[in-house]
Image (cartoon, rainbow, N blue to C red; front, side, top):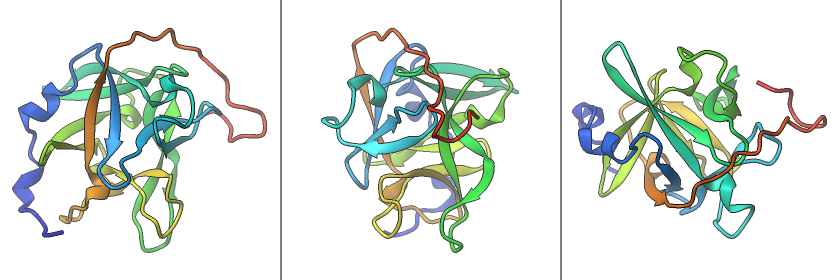
Length: 188
């Protein structure tokens, strides 16, 4: 895919408009055509088809916040009441990648950087979910851990692994707050 100019990643009002406060949305990967999914352990995040797993696991409630005059989106899982977040555990993935694991995380502090996302125009109806650290939400490819989701630093190249379609979901959910299973990773 041809690299867009650096100005391509500027804030685009239309991208933010796809995330009205209180709306329920699903994010569909432009690479796999699968959905961002809150895993049953209450911590993990993966890619799944709509048919796999409970419907609420693929739905996120939008919370809009503003910090220092910049609008951000927080994605609150409809299934387990945790937010889409950057893992505090540091670098993850193959050595040639500069990526970080994406997890579900509680809201410990409204100023918490780990849960702050800024939608950008990704072209052709897609959005790019930019994290506060200057990374983009990525649906990992077929070479390793293909159903995993990460945040990759942005070095000026785009692939459709970083593009997402926003789909609105009308149903309201009663959130089931779960604790991660004992055999799973510790709570974040």
